[in-house]
Length: 332
Image (cartoon, rainbow, N blue to C red; front, top):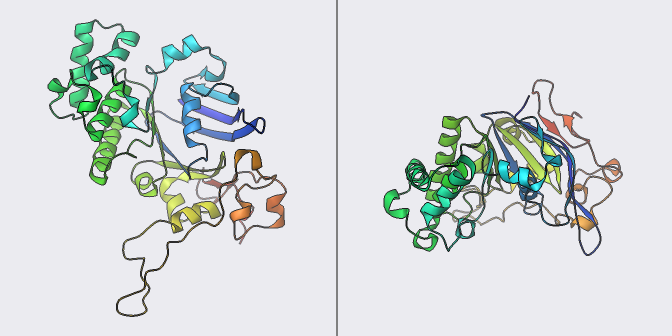
């Protein structure tokens, strides 16, 4: 039995135009020690997927489908059960370290809080464990930082504290939503290396959410590409990035800035060429077309693409689990 088993997950949100479908039939599994990446443009549903796994959906949200964690049906549990699970067995590294911490409490208090709530440690025991956690995430001068407040730490230091809080109770599943967005390139690399090392040491499952293809390429075993609330491609990360099957994945890869690729070969000085882009925009939730949501932006769209949303299909008989939601998959 997989640690996390999500089948046909659907999420409806209230809006001024009436109920809209934000997640439209997501299915995936995650084993202990496995890493899975969710990637796609802003607004495609990545963060909503994470919030669904944490039981933190906005008011009025309606969730359907099967959502099982370690054999427990998360779609059926009440808020007290979520409070016992959240932070203990499932933990999250939130996107923005500048706002993820409470400015009114010290770092030591915030790291110790889940230890006291979930593990029943005394104040002294929790403080000692909090110090060990801060040292484990390599926070400089950890002992002195225990009594510091978030505004006294840099962005990179705050992100390490957020990771320490998430890891405090030894969760089985860690959800990291854009964990390096607010950091510079050097700190991004350090935080990512830290996360990967901790996942390997503890045998946790990791769901990593990002829009950074390079980050995904070096961080996760499997990759799921999201567009308009659906998975349009998923499979082994190296296979998906080396030979993407879906036109949207191809467009994302083509739009990556590459060193030295912005000049033509004509003339000694070179002429700066524009970056490749995907034309059009992601449809609003209340404007979803009847067929493939990517069809209005796709150069390969056929009439059948506009009639019904394509299902995920196997890309290659030699690559188990590699799928793409495109009618052109498997067609010569």
